[in-house]
Image 1 (cartoon, rainbow, N blue to C red):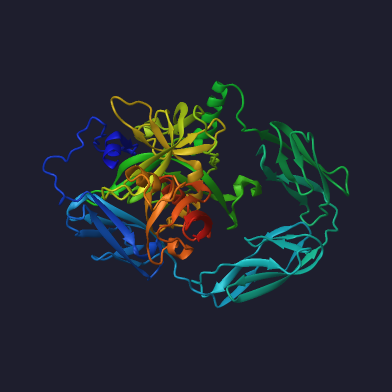
Image 2: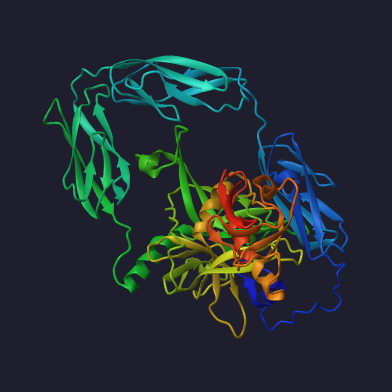
Length: 638
């Protein structure tokens, strides 16, 4: 199968800035002249116990396997950030300073045959000895103050937990921001490890008459979202009892705390008036945007591209050349899917609905999804922003060794709307879809193409480690949207403006057109949170050797080891010691009929189900088994 696939399709690799050969099915699949098994073709780097994160001063042993196995196993190790982690000639890595680093293993003197391993080094925890709350001992009813803390020693690595002993008097969030809820006293509590520090906070009543009111906040809100408006009174400690009102509750409503909820497109005036002085009034005009895409097909297509194109960015892969100069090696695409905010007061806010004004944001923090092969072997990664025509530094958080997916982190000084993920299981053939990316380079950034879902679920056997043996069955969405080198990592979108896939490969031949493949969003959504942490998905191996019942019956009809009436399933030939299968109770001569509610006809069916499970997830999977004349159900713990 692999030889056929290898001849049939190409990964839509990021557009290389060096000459590339794009194979097609007319290429000769035989070994090139002069190439023998002793010539390295791939290097796979692995860590002990699948560890991807170490602390400063910790070590991690990496191993490199050169394929084919008949080739010399000699490799040359290198680190692209020796101030973060160093690697010796035997692949032993030592963490030096917090950060991310890529460790490479080159096959002998073959600079182009390399395996890479992304590693995160975290700061060595230094427990605090003392902790003190910094901030005033009083605030006014309705006032918000951010409290901070100081610890000793100065290099301590605290993980603060804020709380209060009286939630009726004050509230406090994870950032230490305290709101006075009503007059009285309450303790503000800071817990860091085993250290607890308290500070008594007095909430004072407001008794001074207000002289003026002012509304602070954003002037735009999206349907289905909130914006908080902040009331400022003069003097600052004056009575702030007010009534909030909306000029049109069908467009937007406002609650007693000044939070505006967008309901329908339009413009609305939000008014606030003092309870103690009817003459004190302030107002602000809010525009509500509805990004729901409706209308005829052409309008939906135009709106989808206009809405999503600013969120599709370029990804540049930089690598050191032989002179140790960092050069742009290739480019691809990526889609922003998450954002959070670091405020000027040090607070971290993870929901845009909590941002009062963007002027309070110090930096915008983004996650971008792209393909593994876009960032593979990179010594540095940069994000290209077409609006500013510039590149900004980025960091690869991690990539998946099996699914062609990677997560990139970068920071910037403006807001980019994250694209939501849609339901890739709700895609019948014929569904209209759009691809956006950077085909053939950043000069063509934002290019959009259009087509349909050709088939919602295709499975392709792949050799993910380059050893010449298929080791993964990838699930893809087949579509006919035009994609080209540089589109890799860019989104496949439905006409709601939702990501339903990440473009990654296509068939290429003079006889084949418009056969593109995307990783489904429902597969992606479970992998992203793992990659964000710097870890890789740890997928299970069941630990059984099996043979398909249909194959047994086809070869030897009436075979005695297959009972009458059993026409499908997997016959268990062997069970590995200490495996998930053995622990769960699977025995030799069992016939696996279903796994997680899915009937198992082929080994592919079982592998696909296993591919969707992450080790350590705690999932309990029901397995239906034929044993000794009866069908039983056992549960395997993952």
